[in-house]
Image (cartoon, rainbow, N blue to C red):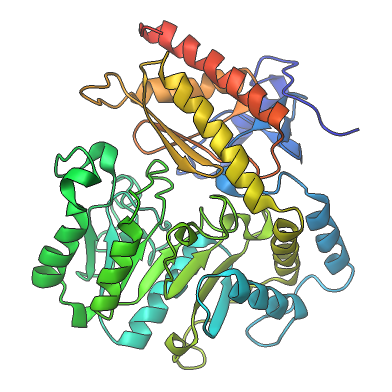
Length: 452
């Protein structure tokens, strides 16, 4: 029987979940942030079942990981078929068929009609680190420019460019020496220069990058790359205004600086295109991919122009990256997106969801902004729409109220909700998620004294 839900049998967290939460608190790293007290034991399609039998509608998909839904049959079959052949062959000493087949498919669907090369790691952070090392090795330049509010990972190389908050960086300074530079992102709802929109400012944040950072701090002939997220993920699902990405590409090209596109969260269909930069026709030099690449198995990919890969043998390797099981799953993911026309589905269903949340703003003043592309939707909560004061506690309470009712959602930024439902989400599931979300929102407004 297919898993159906949402269905709350025991008020969460139930007795079995509480037992595991206690065990977890004694044995695992305290650095792990738990969004909700979920102990997941099964997943199918748009649903996750916990250890007490409660079934949740998953609008977070593990931060955009289970984009095809949980245990998509095509992915399960690909893993099972590969499991019968070989589980592991060291990819830097030898070759495997899935490694090459997935690399060829990624070279095909990533932007740019030019020769490319691919390196596989185990995560988004590793994909980013490969990209950073690649451009530094190629250009022999020290500086990397990133954007405030960006998230690129927590490993030592990626961490310098993660600026969603100070928490991940505190106590780990110095990071990347003195060669990291941060520029303001196109976050128009909270413009750092005080403008009301791109029509008024003319992309002042990119003017600052070009006229101040490149002119006075990090001269172009010393900049190895500019790394960016086309939609900032952990920062709050922040979508820059139309034309912003093209202008960024123009600055990079005019100054002969490699452009690194971090599509770890946005890539492979989440926005309704293969990659988020495709919405503006931007062609980066390097792309970092992970999360939904192998439908939950550990896999990250760095894809870049062939001419950049001029480093020596042994300059960058790993043992477990490009595992045959993960790569076989990745091939199935790419083929399933094509076969089931999931790019169009993401565009249409995403537009429906976003439209409904925009309608919700009319009767809920706690919603300050709704933004997104495709099945990536950000909802920013504020105490007051005029002052835009962050509604941090209200956001956290909303996550828990939704959880208690059987809906999984995730936070991002100081007071935003990020929604990344599976590309396979049905209209009925979407409507049920919307119903629970608004019900939970009303409970939060009542608790905190908001008008609705």
